[in-house]
Length: 102
Length: 138
Length: 174
Image (tube, rainbow over all chains, first blue to last red; front, side):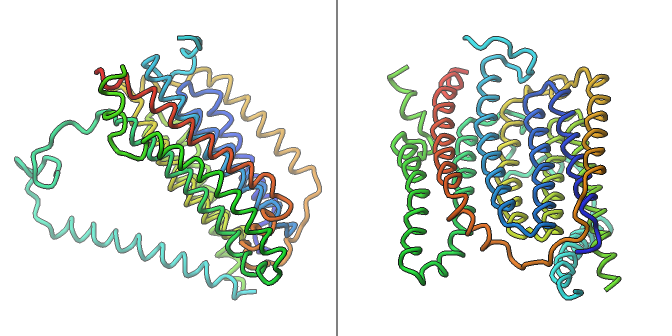
């Protein structure tokens, strides 16, 4: 494991995070915004585990576990909201979701 | 040092072999198989029946609800694995063993309440809203 | 040993490029289904990166929870919300002229932070399977998040059911 330095993993994590951030900002489709959010979370997880590997700490692994579970819960409820939004508006465009009241 | 790479080598070999096998099958099929794309052969295959409808329809929400149930209990199962690995060691001391058991019983208990709730609401029946709210109450 | 090291390097570079490439596909491909498939590629490559980081159990969990669960949810979301032929219209991305330079600035800032901070050079020796460490954390220091998580999952169950019961009725009409 001496081959790849820590900074490589961190650069990968940052790249993934940035791609996700750009996706969240640019895409107006709620589904793709959620997918990009998952990219950001994965980037953070990579950074977590890279630091954990270099410090020898099981805490970060547990933290990544919790991040994954919360992300899955967030996607489940978020997509349910998107589907409800679609039923209501006939669109999943975030810019059109400006009225919250029926 | 070199020895801990052996599992990865095995994984890479498995991936390469499985992709290679699929590739070989596809190539051999493309080379040797007869090609006759006429009539009924170019339609999509639905167990021999004629296709009932287009495949580009929207699904029913029921599928999505079942998928959510799957994800929730999937996460529960994944969280039980680390506990189960630790439990054998913790059982050696009666105090720690019972504490660990209590902790995981709280975890599964809360989710059991959830399971009881969705069961009570009839969400585990496949046709739940058709039977329940399709009749009188709307 | 040199061969093994270069093998690991090659694996890292391969999976890093796959991760970034599929990530770009999620963000920039116009078709929703392709974005979902790109997400699957990213999640699988990230799972392999986890494997390279010796986080074996997290890598398996990534595949079980993300690829097996979350991705299915996304595909259902795609198929539940698309109007028949205008996937691409509802998938237009706006103001990327601003967002992409802003993203590059964000990338540069974080990269500068990474480069300029002192990083440990050599990793600690591999400690074998990580499952026991994770279980230990959940039973001691991370007990509260572990239990709160079950409440979150309970909330997901109830919320999903509320959504479904409200959403099924309009569907029966058409």
